[in-house]
Image 1 (cartoon, protein in one colour):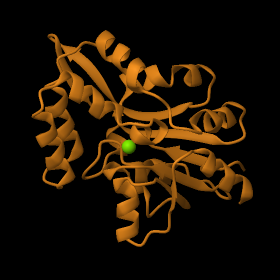
Image 2 (image 1 turned 30 degrees about the horizontal axis):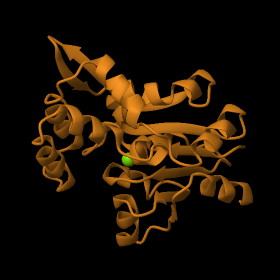
Image 3 (image 1 turned 120 degrees about the vertical axis):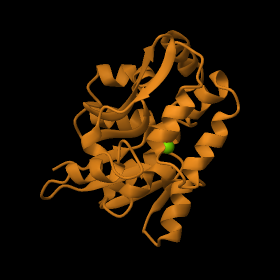
Image 4 (image 1 turned 90 degrees about the horizontal axis):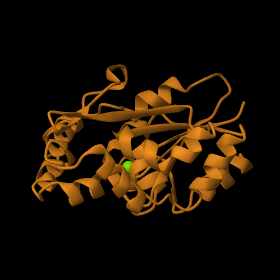
Amino acid sequence: MPPVVVIDFDGTLTEIDVGDAICDRFAPPSWRGIDERWLRHEIPLPDAQRQMWALVGAGPDEIRAFADSVGRLRAGAAELLEEAAQGRLEVVLASGGFDLYIDRILGPWIARGALPLRFANRLVWKHGRTVATFPHPDLSCATCAVCKGEVVRRQRRPGRQVVFVGDGASDSCAAPVADRVFTVKGGLFEQTCRERAIPHTAIVDLREVLAILDGS
Ligand SMILES: [Mg+2]
């Protein structure tokens, strides 16, 4: 059975955190203080996101256009997604970010069927204001609206290897439950795995994940 790669979006499939870049561009600087409260575990991520995204003064078209300009895929992402498009492995997206910019950036790959399973949050506009919504309550945990540990658990099948690739604070729940963990080198997730003594492989290029899966 081909392995399944559960992968984070912001800062993992892409080079930068696109959600943060959108907030930087379209919200007043006070959004950073809200983000830091979540990073200090003072508030759950969905509460932080509701508050942060309410500050974003842009419509969907503006956000899509901005995503086009900043949402470059990480080295090796095309090769990983090509393997998925060819049916040689499964790639499942598990993101604490938002579908509007994710679907925009991954559009050509989604059209090719590389990512049939994508779990992310949703942006809607009500009375001209940006509203963060969380359409996967069944995947939530105490801190995340899309718990990546829960996404990993649901991919378990007898005889199938489930690997996880991530970079940030919201990836922590996946570390103890994945068969193999890859961290983006230099990110918070790598630091968490090191502190908790969870075996992991730090990568820069997603071809490093493919090389290891081919050899296992
Ligand atoms: Mg990330």
